[in-house]
Structures are given as C-alpha cells and as structure tokens.
Image (cartoon, rainbow, N blue to C red; front, side, top):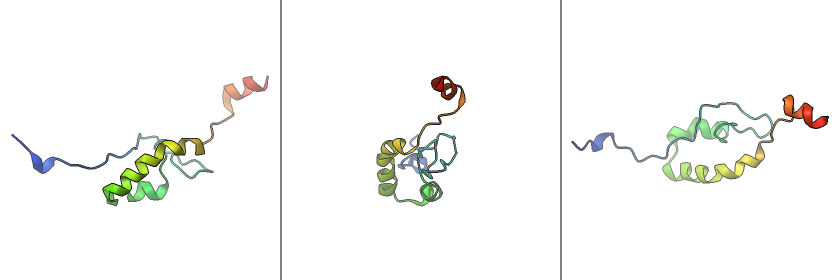
Length: 77
C-alpha cells in the first residue's frame, strides 16, 4: 500500500523541548530560534525554514555559558 496522502515533504522543526529564552540573545537555548521564528514556523515557506536551519549553527556563539554553579566556584579558587 502506498499512502502518498500522508507523505509530507517539510523541513522538521529543530525543537528539542528545551524551551528557555536566553535573556540577552533573545533566542531559545534549545533550538536557537527567535520567538518570532518559533511562532511562525508552521506557517513559513520551506525556503524560509531552510534558511533558518542553515543559520542555526552560527547562533550557538550568541548564547554565553553560565559562569556560576560548582564549576564557577572551583575556577575562582
């Protein structure tokens, strides 16, 4: 049985269910999309989604790591 009715050719969402917006970068720390991109994702054209997906790896540097916690205390020695 070939069920072409249910075949979808869409770019999957990069969401990894870690939905926390970074306060300075204003990007989700899980998927690295902006709030507007997340909101519009299901209504975007495939080329727009593809452009965002291509840009996501470069956004990782926009989110700085926390300096607190145990590792932060140990490094201050």
